[in-house]
Image (cartoon, rainbow, N blue to C red; front, side):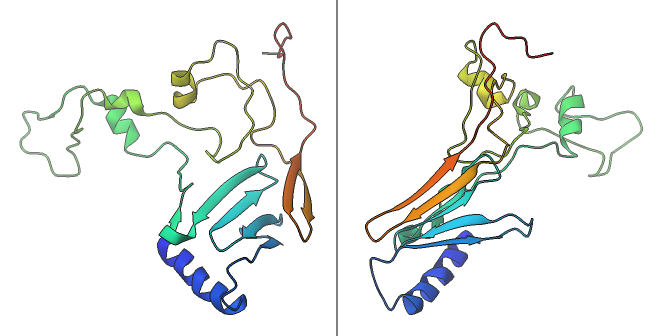
Length: 187
């Protein structure tokens, strides 16, 4: 889908910018209909999609020559079939009542698959500000079971755009809190 959307955008850009190979456009628009503006930086080579209200993140980065969104990620969330994986004790389940229908049989293709069922409390996007406990590990972070010490990941940022003839700068700012060592978090 992204391939076709990016290709369509390139065709439109060719006409809008009259084959200019050096254009730079910035737009503020409510892309997802939530009443809050996202920011699009459009160039011949890449598009950046920024969200000030979702942790000041880059949520899409299109590399136009390959028609590819480099940040095409999914949030890991509970799915109905995960319960079956977690309850599974053996690879094949049969009982004395005869053959089960395809809807009653659930076979995991891999033993221990339930250990990989991790869920995210935030959307994985680019350039989010994390403040982790000192003893956090890469594995804790991967599993989503670490302690976040700041309030930056899901909170809104203030956006300041500077667009001059020589440069474009999109600056995100946030006054936030970071719980330091020795402070009680109230938990």
